[in-house]
Image 1 (tube, rainbow, N blue to C red):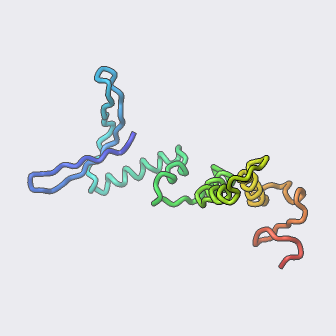
Image 2 (cartoon, rainbow, N blue to C red; image 1 turned 45 degrees about the vertical axis):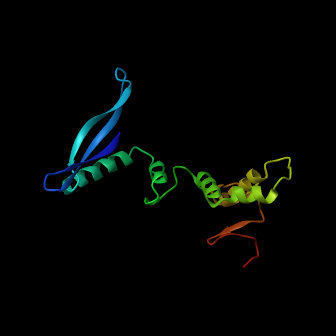
Length: 156
C-alpha cells in the first residue's frame, strides 16, 4: 500500500493534486501489476484531508516499528531507540562512522587468528553497555559508575 498522488491540469492552467490510498495487485491474466485504489482521500490542499492522513499515520505508527520508517527518511527525527536496544544502535553507529573501515585499513594485510574489527567492536560495546548489565561491576571491579559516566577509582 502507498499514498498515491495524482495531478490534474485544468483548462485554466490550474493544477489540482488528489491523494489516494492505493496498492499494486498482480493480474495473472495480463501478467502485470495493476494499481487498485482503496480509498480516495480527496484534494491535497484541503485541510481535512491532511488531518485524516495524520490520524491514519498515528494509527499505523501504533502498530509498526517507527525505527524502520525513520531509517528510510533522513528528515525524520528518532526520539527513542529502546525497542532495538543499545547494541543495535552501537553497531549502526560503528558502521555509519566508518570505524570498521578504519580498522581494516590500519591492519592492512596482516593476518590475525581472530577478527580484529569484531573484537574491537565487542570490547567497545561491552564498555558502552556496562551500565545496563548488573554483573559488570563485579566482572570489572576497577571501574565504578558515577553520574558523569565511567571512571577509574580515584580519578577526578
